[in-house]
Length: 470
Image (cartoon, rainbow, N blue to C red; front, side, top):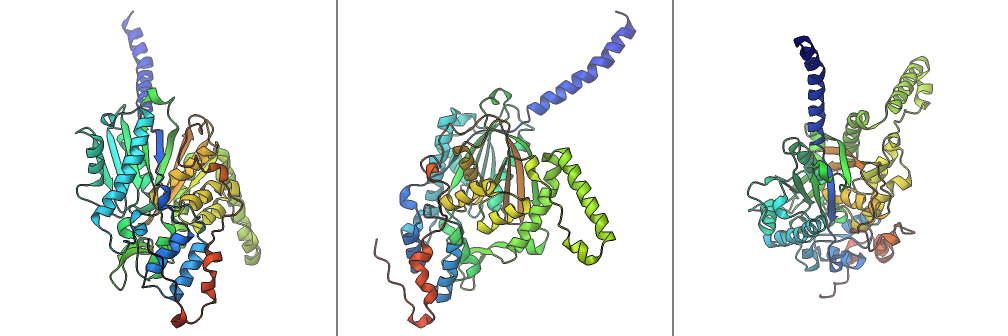
């Protein structure tokens, strides 16, 4: 073969080789979820109406107005009778938590969920290459990841990330960390552990903006096993398509709307400001504006652009009154998304996202049922919502799942997953109760049992009966 032929062959095949190598490297950077395990505490930790009433009555800092406020908040919260609370409130120790309470709460979750996850997947602890733990409102020494490493005897060279203060959006931050680590390390396993510690953060004061958190937050957690091994794609449940993080911490209003602080009496708690709905809406809009071009088909983006231009044109041609009557064009996310996995931050959060995206009750059902059954379990709530979809056998191969979460800071994070196989055969935290969901009514019995509070007018004559000793 003469020299010109060799040169021609090189010029043809070398670019093809480089292209193949680039595609091959990208395939090694994929992020798959092999399995996940949502924590389900024991039945003696359920916060039903009777137990919740006793916890409230123990708080001597509350008055008639606070009781009426709490009743309205609980009745309209969307939370049912089956949610779980931290062990200290069942022992009457919520005003005096100890460090051991935190450790015991985390150990219960770690030993249960991580143990079940590793046993079911057949992955040995020594095979874990990356460990990411997020528990926002508490830090211990040694760290919570160190607790896991010690118990499960992980390798000395495991890459460890310990996230705190990230709030309810932390699990997608953790997934993003794993996604970036998978770009560096081939054939790796990552363990993501997400939860919240309620034991040292149960508020025992009377500030309404802080006591509201007691009505919403409940015990829970999730452990996830991820990999970028191509050989395990057939076993994987989901593949990450894209992830977008939006942070509005530079805005004072956004930064201050969710804050851990002390009240006037020095009692620590979690403050939820009245500006939270506006802040969340602003963050959601910015986040969706960035992720929409990545997940929606071109035809929908073009349709939205044309409709927007036409509306803008006619708004200039028409009178001010006529322009105001023209509805805002809405982008249809359902053209690129099959399922919506929404953070269970509260009934108002779910309703707001539903209205913003034009979702049906069928779309919102997984989030509503999760809020009713498990409450707001902070960063792990997304995975209980996903578990509901799986238990209802909604997730089919090729489906696309959009996850959306909010967190203190203020953050809005979202990501899109592709379902790699039909899901629903394996049991999860919903298995024993999925047949009863959705119930005929989501109303809780608080109003029926404690509605008489609203008829009281004189605080001096108001008194609760003393709770019976345990």
